[in-house]
Image (tube, rainbow, N blue to C red; front, side):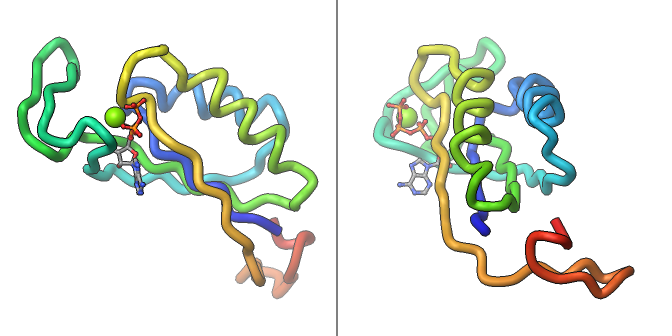
Length: 112
Ligand SMILES: Nc1ncnc2c1ncn2[C@@H]1O[C@H](COP(=O)(O)OP(=O)(O)OP(=O)(O)O)[C@@H](O)[C@H]1O
Ligand SMILES: [Mg+2]
């Protein structure tokens, strides 16, 4: 199993959620975060306003999936979160050791 963590522009969240549903993703965790990328110290547009601060609002989406689904998830997020402008975000893929579904006690891929 893998944990796919995507940091995206907040206004893209609905589109990404829809694309993830379409490929059969059953659960996601979303967190409002702040961050910066390579343009640290430079300006970036957010809702029409130019920010000169280092940290910009982003949304972090965490998706735990069976390893075979990773490419599909990356494709879905990349396609829908892309505007072609700076600050579109990043996707991190990490190994996921174990998942437990609390209600049923199921574990591993069955618990996803
Ligand atoms: N190396 C990193 N480690 C952790 N988080 C990162 C990293 N790079 C980017 N992020 C997160 O992703 C968000 C968006 O990054 P961003 O898309 O600006 O990356 P970038 O490398 O500057 O690419 P671009 O040139 O397209 O802007 C950042 O605000 C930050 O939250
Ligand atoms: Mg950037």
